Every structure is written in C-alpha cells, then in structure tokens.
Image (cartoon, rainbow over all chains, first blue to last red; front, side, top):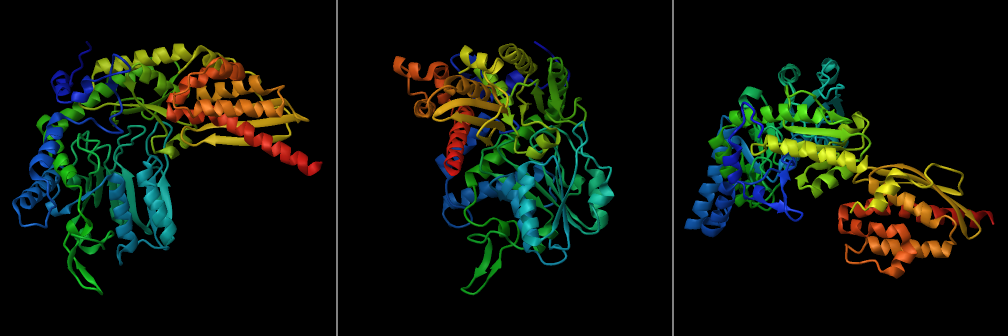
Length: 418
Length: 147
C-alpha cells in the first residue's frame, strides 16, 4: 500500500464510519470520493443523534420540565462548541440555520433591509467572484435585482485562481459588501483573502466568507480572517444535514434587522408591533433544528479529537498524490490548480471527449462514487468552455488506495469508450 | 446499461451532420448539458431524412443515431408508433422486459431498456426523440400553412 508522509491512521478512522464498509453493485467495495457534496457520518455523531431522540427530545427555550431544560442545554452547548471551533469572540455570534445557502441568504436579506450605514441600495455595489457556488451568487443577484445595487465580480485566471489584477476597479468606494468563498467547491482553489479583506476594509465594505469547503478541512479562525460574516454547513463536516451556521460580528448582529419573524426571535409582541430578542435568537425564528445542532456539536468534538491541522495535512498529502496520479491519465485535464499548493481536496477534471455523466456512470459500476455535472458552480464551467466536469473529493477517511482505484477506474472508462 | 449496440452507435453514429430539412429544432437537457440540433425532411407522408448535430453523453448521442436508422424511410404513422413504443419503454423504470414483438418495432432501440432503470439518464435517451417529434410537428404545420 502507498504510504505518504502526513497521512492519518485511516485504518482506525474508517472504523468510525460504518458506511465505508458497505458494498455496492453486488460485491463492489464502496470507494466514496464525493465528500465535497456531503461527508459521511461517524458513529460518534450517529450515536449522539439517536441518544438525543431516545433521552432528551423536547422543544428548546420553552418548557420548564426536565426534558426541555436538558434539550436546551444540549442545543446551547452545541453553540459553545461551534463558537470555540471557529474561534469566535462570543458564543452569541453563532447563528444556527439549516445550511450554508440559508446563512448566505440571511446575510443578503439583513443588508437589504438594513438602515444606513449598512443598507445596500441602487447607489451601491456588491462584489462576488466567478468561482462561487450558486448559493453565493443567486442571493446576491436577488438582492441586486430588488435594490438596484450593481453586482460585480472577480474573474478567474487560466490556472483556476482568482484574477485580482483589477482589484481597484472591482472594489470601490461604492462597494457595500464583498462575498467570496474560502475554497472553491469545483476547483479546490484556496483563495488568498488578506489583500481582498484589506481593500474591502479600506472602502468600508463588509466581508462575507463562504466557508462550506473550508470548515471541514482546515482550521477556521474568524478573528484571524478579519471577517464580518462566515457561513458554512454541518453535513460537509461529519455532521447531519439540516444544520448550517452563520457567524457574524456582534456589533453587526446588534445593528442589523431580523429577516425571518416568528417564535423565539422576539422579546415582546403586541398586535401592532414587536421587539426582538438579542442575537443570536433574533435570527433564529421558529423551532430550530435541535437534534441536528446537537449532532453538529458532536461532529465538532469528533474533528477536534483528530485535529484540524492533522486533517489538513492528511488531505494535502493525499491531494498531492492524487494530482500526480491523475495527470498520468492520458487526455485528463484538471480544471483548477494542477499542484497541491493552496489547494483543497476537491479535484475536477475532464477526460478527453467523454461526457462526465458517462465517466461517473462507469465509475459507479466499479463502486466508485464521484460527482458529475456543473457542481452548482456553472459560471466556472462557462469560463473554461466545458459543459461539466467529473469531481473526485477526499476527506480525513480517504486513502491513497482509493486514489489508485479512481485512476484504474478512469483507465477502464477510457478503454470502454475509446 | 452500456450495451454494445449503444457503444457502437456512439462510436459510429448513423446520419450525423446537418442536411437540408423542412424544419429545425434545438433541444437541451439542462441537468447535464446535452444538446441537439435536429432537422426533419418530409416527402409527403414519408420521412426522407432526419439529420442532427449535437454534443453530450453516449446515451444521448447513441439514441440520436438509432433514431436516424429507425425512422428514415418510414411512413409518419409508423414512425409515430415507434416513437410511442420507445417512450413507453423508457418510462418503464426497468419494469418492461422487451418481447419479440417490441424488438421487431424498436430494433436496436431495445438496447436502451436498461437505461430506463436510471431516472437521471432517461432524459438523455429521450432528447433526440422529443426533438424529432417537435421538428415533425413544426414541418407539418409549415406544410399546412403553405398548402
């Protein structure tokens, strides 16, 4: 078996993930290379979810009975864990949502309804990038259409990096908000954000980071980033679906208006008006995803027990190996950086003229699960003149043997359609 | 799913390329980006030619080739029956095991029976057939206008 410096003890880790022992298509060992779409769930998280429903299930912040108090403590305990995980100055800055899309929509709507100095209107500009997931494009398009604000974006270089050469034209005195991903979900590019943050701060614009592909894979420190908002989702970081996070600076969360109204987000309500609870509850209308938040807390515990630095190191070693092996496959073109430098563990590629749906289908018959299509980042496909890509993505449980299986599978695909 | 017949048609497509036609349509499959431009030329009630150009997965491209082979030279009524039988097979979710009678109607197109088990791919197989139906209707309405 291939040994690479920096790898985790995947033999031990894989025992935590029952699904990885599954067989598909009558006896084919599952090779799961789709963690950028959703990660698998360790027993430690599955057990906490079951235990929650078996012992603690109740609505939060409402009853005075034992279960309600215990459920509330677990839910708020998960908030503490997430706050620590991202080095938030205060636990009250962590808002639970249902996913990263909802988190980003929430920011866009806070700014759309805000008073000065935050309000986005027809005299202002919004900045995104061409490598965003649709969840960090469409909410800003909607805000732009509704307010008349101008939407601008950074383009991409040939090798899958942000083109920052025209930064002074993109970010101007009119810019109210700059929203970009830390790591591209399609190309794996890790973005250099310091220069963008500095420029945004110079013109007084808020900075929003989509950390969906960063939080699961590397240490995330919202203070070091000097961010204003950071969004990510639970199911890509060993947690359940249905739980996302929006972190926002306290001062902003105090000043900005709520978006969804309802139970739990209020202080007092009369028939003519209401006052609102302080953040984070101001932004958590209705019964929240309680079990899912508790499950995310367990996922954070699990990731911490291994260590985010170690996970990043493992993925870097594996990505270096995967890039090298993939480039040995004839006619394979990587869309995005072709080295492991400043690169995450999602690798998109095309294989000659073979359509990605055919690549994915034949790989699936071999038990290899990859993602095919435009990966909810269609502008990237348009930029590079391709209809779609095949994407293999790795995580803490992925192994060099799985990279080898992918490469062998791609050889099979080439012979099949060649 | 990938029967040899399908791969043969994919690698060596029949009647590919755009030629003169009475009507032209352009259809796309937004989920995977398959595209086809298709023209139909009629001679009275006979299909004189179905020509096409497209890009996409092997299933969508092979299906267009099979369509060309099956329908060119047929009377419209018969072609319509073939199209309906193919549609029925593709919507069967793998439940129809083609019998001799069906094989006689569909010829090479029965090879797509396995595709019907994959909901994500059914649209790929049907792309050219829906385009043909659309183009034929357009050709007939043009004809009715000029008659």
